[in-house]
Image 1 (spheres, protein in one colour):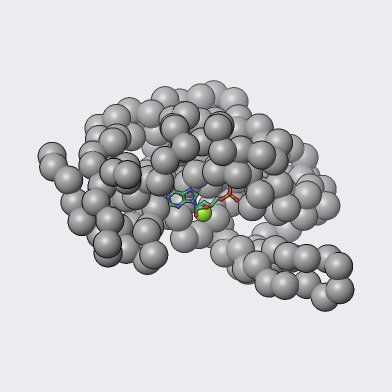
Image 2: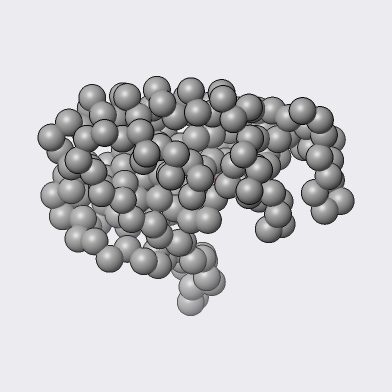
Amino acid sequence: MSTIHVHDKVFEPYLTTEAISDRIQRIAEQINQDYEGMRPLFIAILNGSFMFASDLFKVISIEAEICFIKLASYKGTKSSGHVITAIGLDIDLIGRHVIVLEDIVDTGKTLNEFLPQLEHQQPASMRIAALLHKPEATVYPITVNYLGFSVPNKFLLGYGLDYDGLGRNLPSIYKLIE
Ligand code: IMP
Ligand code: MG
């Protein structure tokens, strides 16, 4: 594998398709054990998590549901600052065992603002599965219950992650060369 150019930047290979697939298999095995008989509801956050969600869900062998949502952030009125709302969340969460699927937890801001909204709907439990986590960049407290890879604070691309719209279709993950 060699470097690739996307827009004005150059990226080098970082995580292979095989490495990603192995980790996802492990995560699925753990979830299959932990949620046997509980019919968990996976909530995948678009766009970034679509590939992770798809590959993970294929190796979930217990009864489970999945739905895909998109988070829209807009400027709230007065002092409320940014408000995040979920588009497409059409399933009742009361009493459900929810597993939120994220591509990457960076600062943690997105989940930190969004998770309380889910909690508000009184799920029986809620956990987070993220393919990637940048602990050095995380400033909002987020516990990732099922983690693929802990990664350095560098810009990553591929396997759902984009750089200004491009690169989501890459089957492996690349790292920005600075
Ligand atoms: P947070 O709210 O700072 O945790 O941001 C999380 C979101 O930022 C992720 O869901 C991604 O969409 C995006 N993001 C964070 N880091 C990267 C990266 O290295 N490459 C591409 N997108 C990223
Ligand atoms: Mg995302």
